[in-house]
Amino acid sequence: MPRPARPGKSRWPWRPTPPCKRNSRPVRRRRHVDMELRYTRHYSREEARTLLPDIRAWLTKLRLLQPVLEQQQQGVQKILNQGRDAGGERVNGFLRTLAAAQSVLREFARRQIQLQDLERGLVDFPAIVGGKEVFLCWQEGEPEVEYWHDLDAGFAGREPL
Image (cartoon, rainbow, N blue to C red; front, side, top):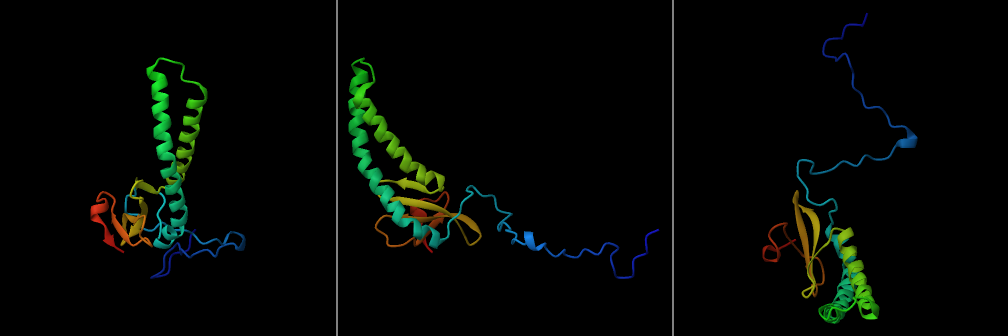
């Protein structure tokens, strides 16, 4: 027969169990659990800033590949318009250039960084600012990541951090 509970005491005293030394890792709790998030990766201003040298290099590479792709695409289109076999070195060169461009674009995609405009070098980083999911916004020529905007606002909605 169970003992009756003392007045003011619960029958089941819930006390935190001390963690085992082997498994004493800090528990990562999700902040903003009430918020519905579009992105799984969010950047702090510092994290975005440290990626800027890589992003500048990727933008340069894409800008170098863009005119080559356009020229090669025209050559491939001529072959197709003539009804000839779409093989050979011209097509293979186009496919190699296309693969190089896709490789750079995958660098953005796997980090969930949004390349908004290649010509302007406009890039958005998903972030949490003031408890809200937003984009940190950077444009080539700006020394640092200094702006943010709502996910649906775009460049016109930029505000200083």
